[in-house]
Length: 120
Image (cartoon, rainbow, N blue to C red; front, side, top):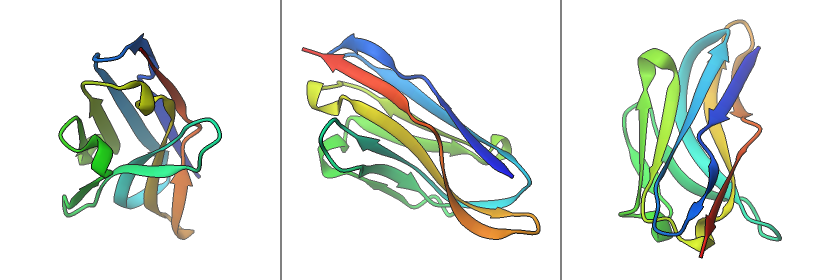
């Protein structure tokens, strides 16, 4: 029905920048909120940033001022620009979207994740 495909992760030195992308495809009627979560080894998954269809944005306190979330509604894509990366940002980053699927109704969908490693 719906797929979320992330890209843009990688290994880099602390202080560097990365841009994550997540594209939704399938029998999409509409997309409400889109966002990014992350899970570090041994820790629970946490919300990093979300953006609603009305452009309301929320950030995890520790990434505010360094990360920027944006979305391209025409492409059903959400981005996460990550600057000044710190070792503690190292995690698998997951895309999430609240999607209304044609004939199936609304649901929460996840991507498979993309690894980000910021080495000190």
